[in-house]
Length: 158
Image (cartoon, rainbow, N blue to C red; front, side, top):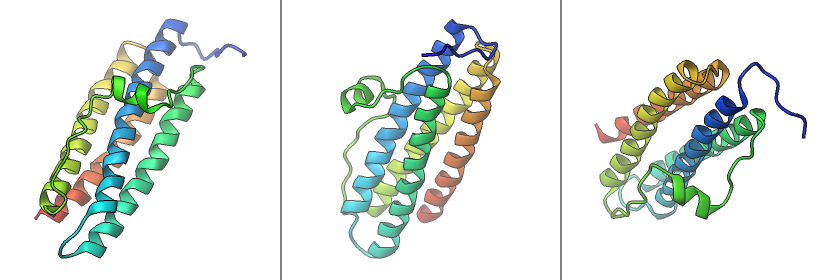
């Protein structure tokens, strides 16, 4: 494989890729929880929430692909097994009562807000410490997508 030559040290590229792989695990856990909500939601407004969760997991699927591809752009391999995801994720795999729509929405909202906080911190670190402005910008774009998704979830709680 031809070595990446983008004026970022190998060590810094590795650190950026490591943070991205951890983010990939976080995104995959949130994706799975959102699919689970889609499959199991019940009660009043079922169809609206069923469709809403489908839109959200479709958006997350695209984001997951973008994160994995960003790892590859840096010259590293993206993780891709459930075992690897669970080993490094910062998300919890909480179970929630599927008859309680508000709790499901609240759980997903909290998860998006967790990823937003992680991205805010990691984007600064990647830029300042690892001199990888491209990955920092990429993370900022993902953060904005999560902020919009969190806003949509929040609207279901009001």
